[in-house]
Amino acid sequence: MTGPRRAGAPDPEADRVEAAVVARITPSAETVARVEKVRTALVERVVSAARERGSPLVRALVAGSAARGTYLADRLDVDLFLLFPPDLSRDRLREEGLALGRAVLTEPETRYAEHPYLRGRFEGFAVDAVPGYAVTDPSRPLSPVDRTPFHQEYLAARESPEIVGQVRLVKQFFRSLGVYGSEARTEGVSGYLVELLVLKFGSLRGLLTAAREWRIPVRIEEASRDPPRLPAEVALILADPVDPHRNVASALSRRNLALLIVAAGAYLDRPAEAWFERRPVPPLPRDAALALAHERGTHVTVLGLPRPELVDDTLYPQVRKAERAVAEEVGRTGFEVLGSASAAEGGRVVVVLEVAHPHRPAVRVQGGPPAGLDRVGQFLEKWSAVDAPALQGPYVRPDGSLGVDARQELRDVEAVVRASLPRLSLGRDLTPNPPDRATVRSLAHETDSPALGEALRELLGRRLPWLPPR
Image (cartoon, rainbow, N blue to C red; front, top):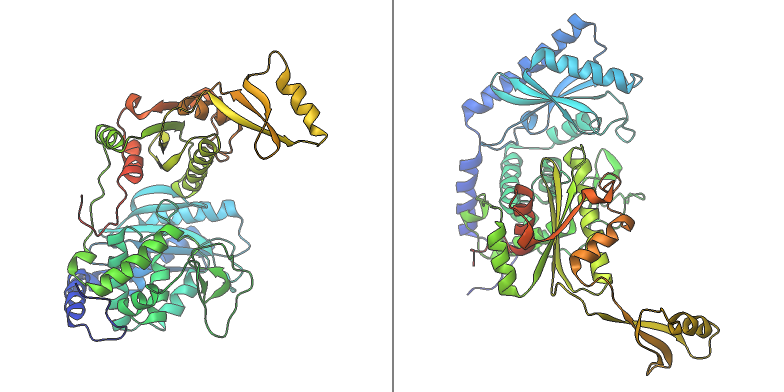
């Protein structure tokens, strides 16, 4: 077994691997020419449609990977941005943006982020037509996409063909780990962040060589800048070069950054083409999960909640908040929580919880005040009453405080979760009303579903993605 490779040392095997991967993921010359033609035609078509409609469109542009050529051979969505005057109302922005999208795209479908946008087809390509405002100062955007033209100009002025090749390589590496994408569901790395990291470190190996030494939280700064308002409690901080008060990496979770750090060292020590292959992540069926729980000697509880009509980017932060709230409550009430996970499907949100034992004792020790305090009288009065749920005591504990062994009415973990739901903060849109719309069952009494399988895989199938299955 070889030790870690010295930073900066030549690595012929990594050169061979990366050259082979770049050749595989680079779009063909024919595809590049088609994309260029479509970019021009799409902008011309939408400008013409705006003129015919009398629309107040200021500018239309194709930005993102399709504009800079940083897309992968098997993954290309064209992002068309429709920019309107800053004084246009939100309602009119939506109206005009959707109307122009429908005028140029076939198979249009309305999607939702902060505001609606249109997804459709244009000459064989998937296109997202996104309305925004033509602002002059990227540090004062009126919508999340208003910085896009400035991002486009910043990157286009700095990226060479060599940098573009390295951007594709990093994207493919991150895809193989399952951390490419800044959506709330993924909590990973955006394409814009990838390009900034490659500009900063020069290459995949330059990035990974730096990353293997990172300690979370990581702050990457330009020497001349110290953005004062960036949040500190995040995994990675990289100031947006066009808006230094914005953290480009705010979506990246600590877990995913830690995965990148571990993977960086492992790849540099043993480069192979397998690092760039997408790995299937099948759901874990209920019966297989029951067998694993039996082998582990544990118990799995399933909480089901009605799914509100929200887009994933709004829903998933609430789903994870609900998962944390339930896990913390169960741990606080005396169960040993080994793990939790969550997922969502069409009409349902699922939270799964693994505990060491499904039951807690019939007795719990209730601590009281130290002897000599005024509150001793209140404690004795409460727990000496005839109807007090005391199994033993009150008595003096070895540390000099009073105590009592109290009867624990709710002993099953499912009963505890069920009783706690009305007072838990599950997220603004997730708290079931009425409470009986939620279901709380042991895994043995659940039926398979896509969300359950996804959550069970996360709960009981955790393993570094580049390692072979057990």
